[in-house]
Length: 199
Length: 199
Length: 199
Image (cartoon, chains in turn purple, orange, cyan):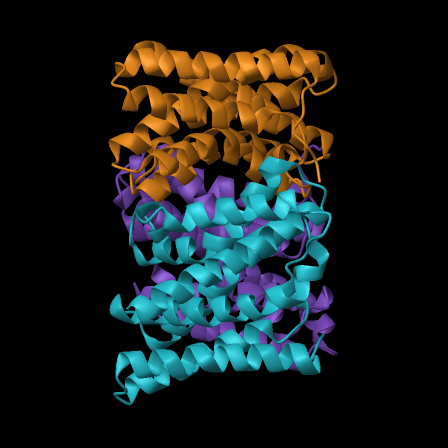
């Protein structure tokens, strides 16, 4: 689907920027910033493909993803003195990426005959694992495990997609509803500073 | 084998509880506690299946494991104020899981035609990698690399299983002897505070 | 190719020593030192094989690699009081390993029909991912992301190999030129303390 592919690339760029930006703030060198950009952008989907057995993973089959991640990371690095002002707007693109990634992951898992719980897991993982690997490489407890409703948006979207598919909703409709739900929950969470109960 | 499957589920529950408990102590939110519970419970076996090429891994084929991990993690989270008193008893179930996981990993590796060293490695990895990923996510040096005889119990059990198989012992007998050895070494190590030489 | 295999084993030993040495300095116990030795030595190539779908990975097919890593790690652990004086000479063998690993990774990726960017990535990953996993296990930001021209040597070698192959250079010639380039860049970087621009 063409729209999904474009949203996927938008999300890839946004995730690459967020990864590269963590690298910059951790005072990494150019190589580190590139690695964090690439890994954040394609890490979740690559891990999903390893677990589903779709080898080589999407990121090595269609090199567009890596190209985008490399170019975005270079741009962030080159503009590292003035990138802070892009942090807020970046969150909107990041939300688009999140919704798209979750839906792509969950639908792919269903196509690979996984059960509903596995499909939700694969959706959430596609949306979040890149950021988790980014934080591990930056030697910090993954943000997503500590606060923010970020993950809950993914879980909600994953469930919704599985339920809609189960009810026989056409794939494109189910995908759009689920993706939009993730994006809206995510943006509302940013707007109103929602958080899960903490331990 | 039915007994092995039940022990496997007991071990999964114990590992999920230990993972969720680390999440609680690190003040993660509900999502973080769930992730740590799941990853600790199925991480070792999933990594093993990736390396053996048994895809999708057991944890996505039979969703019982993830269900158990999710439910246990929810219980730990809900009772986080009073969970400390379960830490000690949990160690006994954890030991059962450890013995079972090592034996399952090593026998599966042998069935996949790995050599004896590979089989020992896969046994040890099945028993320990979940806890290692848990500690990486919690941003601490994996406990198992620093102290305790925990790993040695796994290594001993893995070797024993490989030797017994090589000597022609029937699989169920070899499995029981190796698993019980892991469990006993582990419990004695807790009881008498054994440790490996340190650097 | 026999020469490549011998260089591969030399590199494996050097990487295992560097991993075990990090384990010693982090005051890990014997098991931790063994794990860090093994993971540093075979981690990069194993991850590459997972991504290429060459399962089981080289490290489980030919147990020589793990044997060497275990023996080297044991030697480092046994001589941990006096190992510091070997740190410098070890860098030379480490450079040999780096060049060999990059070339093996990139050529294998080309043989698996990856594009040129994927081949460069797989070369760099084969040379560096073991050290990255070592640093994650030791709970430190991976060295390679922070400073040193280490990674740039790999990137240069990967590019060179891909370009030479593209120009029709015979594989053994391309491999030698690329490997020697990595080794020389790495040694010059150590000698003159080169570094990439930092953020």
